[in-house]
Amino acid sequence: MNSKAIITSALPYANGEIHLGHVASTYLPADVTTRFLKLNGVEAYYVCASDDFGTPILIQSEKEGKTPSEYVAYWNKRDYEDFKAFGIDFDFFYKTSSDENIKFVQDVFKKLNDAGHIYEQEIIQFYCNNDKKFLPDRYVKGICPYCNAEDQYSDLCESCGRVPEEITDPKCSICGQTPTKEKTMHYFFKLKNFADSLYKWLDESEHLQKDVKKYVQNWIKSGLIDWDITRDITWGVPIPLDNAKNKVFYGWFDNHLAYISTALKFLNDKGIDGKAFWNSADIYHFIGKDIVYHHYLFLPAMRLGINSEYKLPDYIPTRGHLTLQSKKISKSRNWYIGLKQFLNYYPADYLRYYLVAINPYSQDDLNFDWDDFTTRINSELIGNLGNFVNRALGFTKKAFNGVIPKTTTFDEKDKEAEEKISGLSSEIGDLMNSNHLDRALKKVMEFSSFFNQYFQHKEPWKNGPGTENCVYLAVNAARSIAIAVYPFIPESSQKIWTQLGFSDNVNDHKWDEMSELAIPAGHMLGEASPLFSKVEATDIERYKKQLGPQ
Image (cartoon, rainbow, N blue to C red; front, side):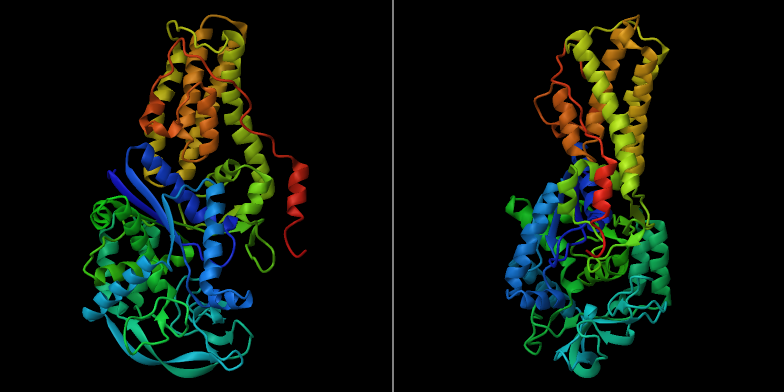
């Protein structure tokens, strides 16, 4: 494990509220990983930014009578507040429209241009005569030429994940009419020239997912196409050339560069050499499977094009999409749950627990199901973990006035319980290091289940031989759980910590401390109370009815 790390996640587009689908694949896994790394003593920083540029923002801001800057400022603030309420603990949250990012993007372009990786070419682009504008990216929909999927955007097929050279049967996304083709001058990045170096980087990368690497390498083998990095709109990072007036960079040219510029801004302001830190740290980019093409091809090629002045990512954890009740999430059809909306229903830790538990480290899609959510929270989080902590601490308060008793000689069951505690940090840590967050959380729940059974077997309420040992080990197991669940459910973790009678914060401690019997005889517990409240079926039925057309 490197002593330094920079963690990023795909930038939230500043054009609407954050919903459950956004947080499941990127922000929550990134946050859990960052918290884990920090507990292990890693100097880790989680940085992010709102993605502020593009045609959709320009059009929507016009509809609302705002400038684009005013529009994205609102969503930057709102998104950050929603993330914070969910327990996403960014070290720094910035914006792609910042002066720092604009300057950085233009500087990278100049270096790529000077190195001969950019060329100018006249192209034919879709133009809507009805709306009187060129139609970049998501304002043209049609059929993917690779897999024949319908209703796909011109810059990305969400079905096969490839970027079409030209969409088939194009339609204007604004008015639905067939656009014409007009001439315009654009700038291109020579992506084709990086095929060999990209293939080699993928081959040599130790931590990238094997299945993702394989099909990206197949893309490379089938032939890359040069990348059009220009857009004919007014809202974006201006191209720093005299003959490129009224042209800006394609959003995917500038937004992932904000990973670097945002990190540099944050670190330099802290008095740390940002560039040196970046190049000596482990770099994580958490993404969803729909943007693999950009992060495995565009992003590394651009860094290679400036002679790897900033190191390429070590990890690109890639996960699938979230569906809702087994249907694709759709804002236009009101088939989604806003993050802020959900947090009005239940505590953040309920959602954090559920989304980690159902989310494997793979590109397989996952499904949010209200009934499954109810079952898992009630039977696992409350019936297992909450039940154990409450009974262990509650019994100690009742039978020993909250004071941990002195132990006697351990029997075989006690020794087994002691071994469970001593092995917990490495058992869970190995899974966390491998990004199998769901499996790590499952191990915590198995640990809690073991101690529920241990407590039941020892029957301390009968006050027989070994009662003191049972109380001592059970309370120490609750302490282990408090540290182990901190990355996943931090608010509940701190509640356990406080009930254990500690006045500091659980994250002031180290990961390995969970495997210590650190609560001695004579320690006084705090006040014990239930950690969670049951999810009621009647409430769930009401929430279900709020989905879909109203």
